Length: 289
Image 1 (cartoon, rainbow, N blue to C red):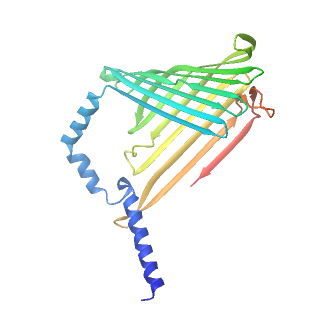
Image 2: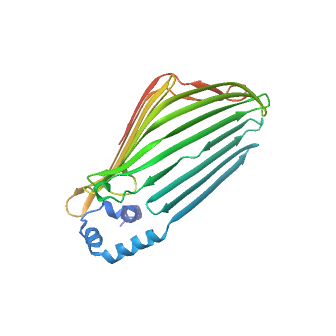
Image 3: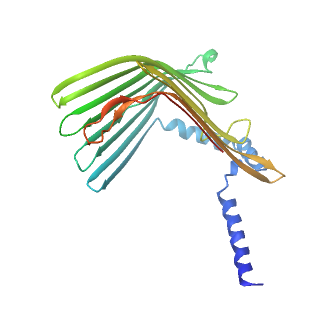
């Protein structure tokens, strides 16, 4: 056999083996072994539930810092969750600091969190109510002045499931404040406005649908504050279609829609402190498969 043919055969076999090793087991056919393990491993399931009940709180911390061409970027994230009987608390803290070689500084701080309460009454056990909040502070400064943008969303939420698919609904009040600061101790012009928001989430990127070997997730957000109103929807699906008895075809699709305008701090061309501005009204549609 020629050497080139041998090399080609070895390459094809290696590629096939690599694909088999990295293909998710839950997206392969037949699924009898997985289903038997799920139904027969009751003891293992109880043990896993016991481990989850023993873990009443969790804390995750991540720090990412970089320095390039006299420009510094620091991204820090803290995620904390705790269960207190029927109460469940989740609090995230995300802080970014960016400073360029001209000493222009950008701060970004987000402290989103939620508090949920598991109802003990069997009549209402299908729904889990709670409270959701999401304050965000942005600050931009240079040697001549600084500007700040603060937004705050707070309102009730509800978690439930539809045919085994988790669904979350959120709504509430949305506020915004824009400040022009002459210096660290001198306040300039400011503008405040109040609006409303609504949001939803359905499915999960980590758990299969209960009725099909597919991962599905979709979320959406609508907000209106003063002259800024927007609607954003994203969705994605990953799964497998059976071919024959033991083969499957991986399928992926994603779609997104944005309609509206937003307010944000925009950097200037002369490297001064970022100023508050609003984007033009735009409609964006994206589809991938």
